Image 1 (spheres, rainbow, N blue to C red):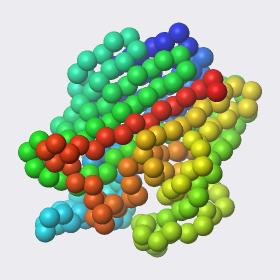
Image 2 (cartoon, one colour):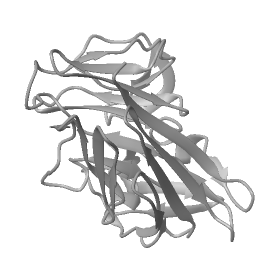
Image 3 (cartoon, rainbow, N blue to C red):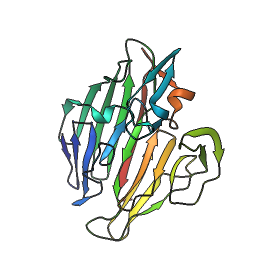
Image 4 (tube, rainbow, N blue to C red):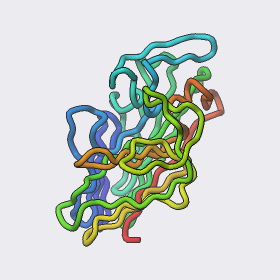
Length: 259
């Protein structure tokens, strides 16, 4: 699905439902290919986000096991591995949807709506299940380029107030800690303002969301990831948002430039 405005263009790949390309004034800001489905573009994490410890989910008295996709854990749900269908589109907006399928045992659906303007791209995701209750955790995983075709390397400006303490398997313990020094592979809350990525001499990009948890990954040399999520990794086990009839999970991410 292709969207365009006078200054920007977006391409949504229906395989995985990901934002596969975003060009602003002719500059590509995303990593557009990778050796795994979880290493490029900006993909939806649904029906869980981040690490699911050892691929295990306990809900409503039953245990479920999922394929280990990033040993020793199952990462980022199933939505980015599935085919999505285009429901409706215009030149600058569109909606895609997918039925959450095997190995996810609860059914349900995920829908994304994209709106592109000259100065922003907003993506909204909604997770529903009209048949039963299920745990859900969602968000996006954008891979931004460190270096554009012009300008200097990316500089990230972000001020979180706290980070989740992680155990030896990189799973949040539930306790909070002071914000560590970068480089980061951390889950944060309490951002003082939206995160801003600047490529000096080229572009300024703000990342904001209605979700209040952020995984920020700055360790790679070629990219940085600023990931809004509806909760911390493993929340589907520890304190799940329960989706069911008349109780969807929904939120949005906005990428804004020309600030």
